[in-house]
Amino acid sequence: MQKEDDNNIAKIKVLNKILNVPGVTRVAIINRNDSIINYSTSPEIDNENLWQLINDSFRSSEIIGAELFWGYLNQCLLEFETNKVLMATIGDKILAVVTEGNAVIGNVRYSMNKAIETLIRLL
Amino acid sequence: MKNEIKDVLKKIYRAVNGVICVFLIDADGIPMSFYGNSQLPVEDLGAILKVCYSSYFVVGIDLDQQIENIITEYTKIKIYQTGVGEYELIIFTNRDVNFSLLHLVATRSKKILIKLLECPENYHHTLKLKEELKIPFASQIEAILDKFL
Image (cartoon, rainbow over all chains, first blue to last red; front, side, top):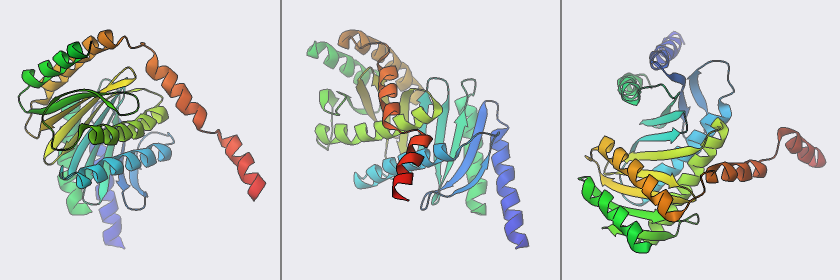
């Protein structure tokens, strides 16, 4: 039990590191199989619907890639008018990051890649 | 006009090293113009990627914004999708392509294609409104559920 709690705290710390990158507004680890959101650290915004949509969309891209032998889906970047959504695979889960217009994507990607290394160990 | 569109696609193909194929599809996912090499039929690719684009479009509705570009990175290839009015420009590339250069070339080509295809500027806005009308409000959902429960 104690070990599980420590693990959860470590995960939140990793997510908070991404959230501290300028321009990042929402971060979450989404469980792909049953769409359960493991962790999300963000301001008081109703994110559940968004994470579900991201999960479903990412899953559809992943299935297409597997069916057409394009390989494993590593990352996906969605560019909207101002916001950007970055998604990356961590084992059977998805790391999703939502940014505002002023975010430097290279910086966000760097912090995501760093976080993925740690999260793979924790998950 | 078809040749002009093909010229734009050819320019993208030649400008960036690592591009496998470039094509333009319409609102139904049917290819309008194609340049490059593809092992799969372009009609199939167009239909599949249109579905992907539509699903990411819904994420945009939730964020209250229209989608501009989708960049998908697989282990073998990368796919760049961008909306051109009601049409969509799709670029297939190798894994090691210079993506910033591709982004620049695609953005410039998109502007040319918008002029060529005479796309309405507010197309995505009308599309968004149409999609929103399909989604019932919470109160409507409750009213529907009340009939059955």
